[in-house]
Image 1 (cartoon, helix red, strand yellow):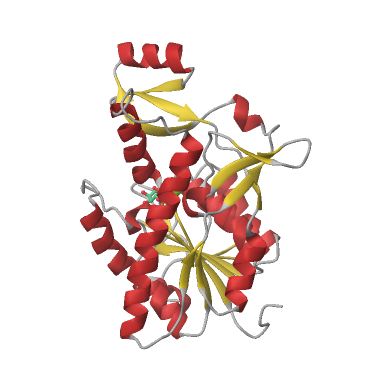
Image 2: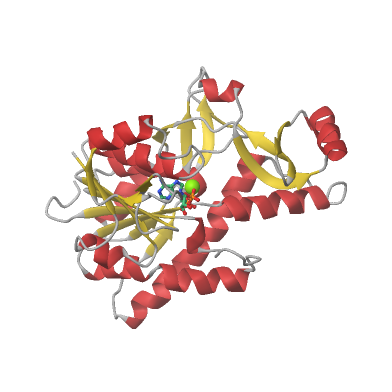
Length: 317
Ligand code: ADP
Ligand code: MG
């Protein structure tokens, strides 16, 4: 059993935690950003929380897909599911090493461990028939037609930047390795799991798992993981300190504490786009409805202030 008195927090690191806007995203830059981004996590650990970390992988998986493409005919092709696994491992390593080094300075003896996490999706999820999530490079029209023909990719035109591959993004149902995550937490370790939304798998008729070349939204996967480990709090760290209604309009209004009902109303009114803030608000709603105490959306450098009620958007029952 997880220690009932301890507070459990799942912290989801957004894309800007490892690669800042305008950067190429070299490994040196990613390590430097990670060092800054873990300060909030260190604060939680020092304050006595049991911490589980999740993270995105958009730019990293985009780079890897480009490498696969450029090495065609020379190196073996890697399917998308394996690319997700590769980036989950590499990003996990960066966070793991950075956090262990930082905890050592605090004289906190804790193991930090990354779990390559498989996440079950429903093979009948309607998302499979309607790929919407753009990934990887941009192409011109001729290249795009060739890729659609030769590889069967679905592609969409981005008004200014060209064509881009889109893949399905089905909803996560279950974290395959959730018992392992719980056991490591019970042992007092800091766990990094469901990185990049996890490696998508479906369950075959005989119960066996099979990888699928789709991607899972990291905010939804973080919510499923948070409910599995019976987390008290789900905190999504991103590029803004709060969620807004009328975002980027002259009358934009930041949200402080809102109820699930208010969050659902704003979602229905279209304040939170599908590709960015929408999944965070929906994940927060799902988390609270599933029994979580409180979900936060805040900036990467605002963890302490947010827990003290001085920043961030808070979604409560
Ligand atoms: P992450 O990598 O952290 O998931 P996303 O880009 O997917 O980041 O989502 C966060 C971004 O959503 C913010 O940086 C902001 O630019 C954008 N955004 C869109 N709508 C809103 C909104 N209503 N309130 C706040 N931010 C919003
Ligand atoms: Mg996002």
